Image 1: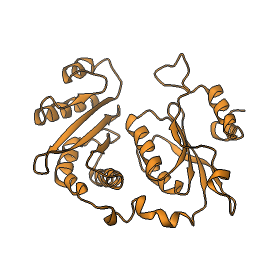
Image 2: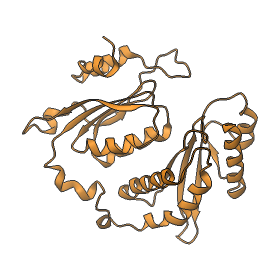
Image 3: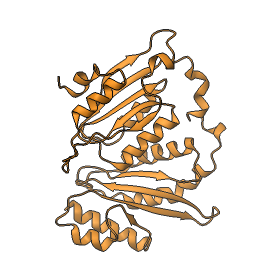
Length: 275
């Protein structure tokens, strides 16, 4: 039933924006339709929305349909535009997700609502100046010096979504976070820096099967980034088994070696539960 509703929503969008939908793993809507009964992969696509009245600026929507959308879960959507600065980029996605959570009920298709919201509200984010963004990372740099450094070890049941993975990388840049994310099953995220709690607050607000912080480490008084942080930047790592299946299980041996190289092997048992 869900796949049929997803296809009907795609057909609606195709009628509104002919030939503008770009699928990640299919060449056309016809291919999605013909594969629907035998293919259980999530459908992912992008859709540009043009603002004619605003010097032809564009907002791009990246969308993924979980298998049980719309019966049990919302779809995943990420909004992006070259006309957003980092503060606006983060804010527009938070505002949209919050709006969808307020209006969505199980069984409701959402892309019509998303398109209307972006068309009505999206251009406002083009014009926000840095001084108006009081809660943007750039506007809050001075208080950071008073905050202790923290390292959060986060464990999720799985991390597959391209949208979530990109958002995690974007947040790490916006909030000057180091560490890594490890997609697959399970999914593991390490955040270290002064604003890890803010990043974690945003990550946990997304749609997850199961996610939580396993370990929190805090810097000692007068301990700076050079002494506390184990990672120079934030990267997405990949330790998938060579004979990986559809579930993308992690190669725990490679992961343990990676932790050892960053003086963190002691975390392995706590975060993974293996000796």
